[in-house]
Every structure is written in C-alpha cells, then in structure tokens.
Amino acid sequence: MGSWVFEPDSIGGRLDLTASSVALWRQEGTSQRRFSAGAAWQRPWITDLGSVITVDLSVRGDLYDSEDVIDDSGNDVSGQTARLLPKASLDMRYPMVRPTENGRQVIEPIAQIVLAPSVPLSKKISNEDSQSFEFDDTNLFAVNRFSGYDVWDSGSRFVYGLRSAYYGNGGTTFSVFLGESYEFSDQEDVYPEGSGVGDGRSDFVGAITFTPTSWLDIQHNFRLDKDDLSFNRNDIRAIIGDKRFTAYVGYMAVKDPSGVPGQNDRDEIYLTAIAHLDDNWSIYGDTRRRLNGSSLVTTSSSDTTTDSANQLSTGFGLFYTDECIEIGGVFRREEYRDRDIEPDTSFNLVLRLRNLGM
Image 1: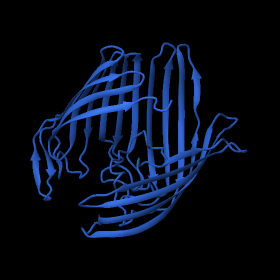
Image 2 (image 1 turned 60 degrees about the vertical axis):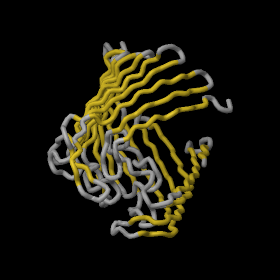
Image 3 (image 1 turned 120 degrees about the horizontal axis):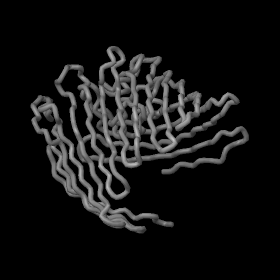
Image 4 (image 1 turned 45 degrees about the vertical axis):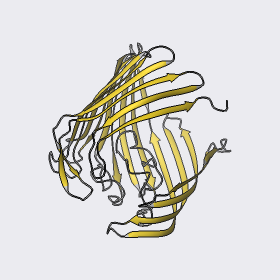
C-alpha cells in the first residue's frame, strides 16, 4: 500500500511508516487475506573513535483472515488471527583503515544484538510469501531475514562477523567476510530444515570477492558447517564482460537438508549471457545443468521417484528498450520435477512502461 519516510527528528532519528495488504483466493486450497501496518525508528551514531552504532526500533501489527490452511496434522484450519511484533536491534561496526603505497586496507569487526519475542507461526496463517529462504552473508545482519510477511523472524540473537578488504589505486579490490549468529531461543520451527540457523550457534557464512579488472569480477559465497567446517553451501561465480556483453558463469553445490550424504545434494553449473546488439536491442540466454546425476524427488502422492534429468533449465529472450518502453519475449524450458511440479515449457511476453508519470 505504501511507505512513508519522515525527515530526521531533533536527535537525528528517522521514522518510517509502512502499510501493506494482500488478498489471495483459490478455487481449491488455501485462501488468505492480510493487512499489516508498521512503524520503525532508526538512529545512527558515529563516535569520536570512528565506530558506527545504529539503533533500530520497530513494531508491526498483522491481521489475517484465512480459509483451509493445512496444519501439521493435515487438518483444515480457518478463521481470523492477529499478532503484534515488536523488535529492537543494536548494530556496532568499527572500520579501521590503513593507507598503503598502492591502495588502502580496511578491517571491520561487526557485532549486532537483536531483541524480539519468540512468536510461532499461527495455525491460521499460511506461509505464502516467505517460503524461499537462504541463510548467507547478505542477510546475516538483516533485522528481518525473511523477504515476506507471513513468517516473522522472531527470537533474540547475537550476531558477529569480520570483514577485511583491500582497495588498490588502479581499481583492483579483494575482500573477505566471515560471520556467525547465535540464537538465544530455539527457532528451528521458524527457519527451514537444513538452513544452518535456528538452534543456538548457526553455520558460518562468508564471502570472498576479487575484482582484478573492470571486466572481471569473481565471487565466492559459502556456508560452513558449525561443527566440522565442511561446505553446506558453495557458490562460485565469475562475471565477465562490459556494457555490451556480460556473461555469468557459476558453480553451486548444496548439501541435502536431510543430512543423508548424496541423497539429494545439489551440484550444478549455470551460465547466463546478455548481449546488447545496439542501443535498443539485446538478446539473453541462460542454462543450468546438474552434475551429480539423478536425485530423489517426492511425488504428489508422497512417494519417491528418481529424477535423472541433468539439464535443469534453458531460456532465451529478445528485448527492445528505449527511453519509454521495454518489450520482449522469453522462451523457457524447465526440467525440475518435485511433488506437483512437472517439466514445463513456457513463453512469456514482457512489457514495461519506463518513467511512467514522469
């Protein structure tokens, strides 16, 4: 519905008000309506020693009206429910910079404490917008790690990490980050199985980036097991090119959440390329392929079968863009198979009006 950000107040804090609503109707299955309103106040400080301290206070209220929500026992639950979600956080960073002959080095320890009550997901709320969750370096210090509203990132925690970087005078950069989270209360019912967070110490999450030139960027994001430091997630990619042509080449390996070695591990390579033919026309292509042979998938009848497709997805697109409009078409073939998801071929038309109302 909207967000309203106010000018800084007399002590330097900034107030942000938000309101959101959604209505979802299905002929079969769960239907749900939600209205949310929230307020957040944030105040950053820079101390005389150079440390950066940020206080964040927020509260959100949700109203739900749901029908035919399937609970853990397989029963249909319908009705209305409401919840009030307060949260407070304190973020502390101390960047230390050392100039060198060819650039500068930065070391930045980071610590954060988040205080919030533990609020389990109500049986009258269907998780529609927070199903996709990946615990990594990008959301380690996020006050709310879920992108949606239905699942609230509840409970108190202490988060800590260290970032080190080198910035060369010629544009070369190299950075390393490693961090971990400690949950003060059991949140395993909040986070997905195998996510690496939710019960006491989390897995270690980190990132390594290296940019030797303007046309090459190498990135490595990973999640290490908190007990034996083995890779639970390993994602390495290179971004090659310039404004005319850009290619993304990557390798990703993710352990199966069940913990059974090799049962349903993900081991994939992927390639995406974008070529600008001129100032208006561009072509796009992507492909993703499995490297570790077949995997077990669950069918709609809860049985398991073997999916031996190595080619997971392929896509091609053609786009026209100018100062007013973007129009194009994308052909895509998906080979994923899991529960009710079957291989599918699609063609999508894309139309975007740019600078609408400007």
